[in-house]
Length: 131
Image (cartoon, rainbow, N blue to C red; front, side, top):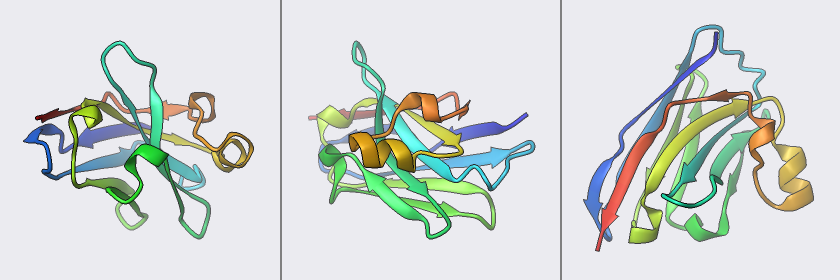
């Protein structure tokens, strides 16, 4: 049973930084070529924020976080990190780690991540940014 566990959430003021980490275990297969971060703000749909996919660790970012967030994947210890800087109140959400075999197709076709491409999900970690 694949397990994804997020850590690093918290409360910060606007302009601050946070680093989220996702640890994969329990039969995690590195052939889950795509690992990603999604977020869901209260009353809104879950949206894909950033992803690392493919053997070359290609990265994807949603437009709203480009230039502020950096996603990185570390195969040595099966972790996925999200460094978030210049945080704004609109970044307030529950952040989820997800893993799946193929997210490139949706990125190429629709320009975004889609939830159905991800079979495994973490429980989430809350990020709150105050103004």
